[in-house]
Length: 518
Image (cartoon, rainbow, N blue to C red; front, side, top):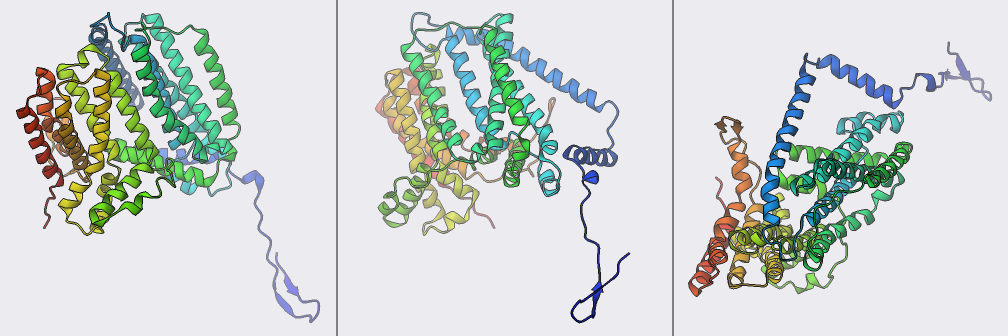
């Protein structure tokens, strides 16, 4: 019951006295209770079908079994490929295991640092985070999921290379256990950085970016100067010790989840939503943006570069060069691709013939994509090209300069590793083709989902998605056919060089073509 409040000085009645509102700690929902309540509401609105969980689990088990059988079948040709010339030093089975596991560790750490590992879905961030519920109860399921994903990915990264190179069943299990333990250490260690606030800075991202470039370079040095190493299986105490270290880091991570800040949870939820949408739509560009858009950037690199711009074309080149120089991930990827190509040609069957062309076209195209930072930004935001006082065709033609240069750098690294050859004179115009293919890829636009699907015995094939993914890759394959002829025949004639120059000119015109819309 409320009464009236009276002023002591005048005796006038001011108004009714309202009770002070206060929260009851006993009635406040914890994070776990809030999650369970939400799950009950969801289950009431979307009742589960009988046997649906069993069917989903069965599909996953069957899919994994089929993948394992395919991997086991592909192991024999790969072993024959690596052992095709036992008299030379090169890419041995043991080095393949080390490189795959090391690259998986770096890539897993980058994904965990960007997407979490502890977090909430976008709806949870909107509705749960502003509530007084504890963060530990809200985010604990994500800890379990991240730990299981890390262990599972590590098992795959450790076990599949061992199966490829012919390790026995016991060795495969030990290597898979090593990969699972390393995956737990990576995820739990990233979680510790997250709850302590160290993951919010640029230092972890810069370290991982350097490691991304350092692992292939170290593999190249091992392939060139270390004798061919046989396949290996790790002793069992090593994964046991790593598993204990990962468990300790997991305990530290789980006990400090209340330190997670709302802004960090929002950023993680946004990145996870973008990555999941790109994964469902098979959008490789969207996936790279989700994983790399929040990475470290160099704020002050080559401050004199913008001053070199002369005219519209010069300004465009300077802007693209500045954007590329401020992207450590793109530069690290370029170094990694150059080293990867140099490592690949250590395999005898890839050091000449059609195998060498596959390496040159593959890593060269990927190197051109790494250098196409400016074209990708313009493809995502067409207003950027509208600000340049050049025609659309001229703008795209000018933007091919830096992708051509980065493709040439990768091809030069492969040429040095393989000792050069008759194809070297054809590689320069081939780099122009690859740079134009990267620009075509950058401007391919959204996926045309309105294209009719093709019915196959395995199900419907989205034609629009296939055509969208082939844009750029088709130009890289068709435009480097003269290079393929030279690598197979081993003879580079002036007519072949002239034909490759003609293909390069046509590739630039094709990449610069702009479809007119009504």
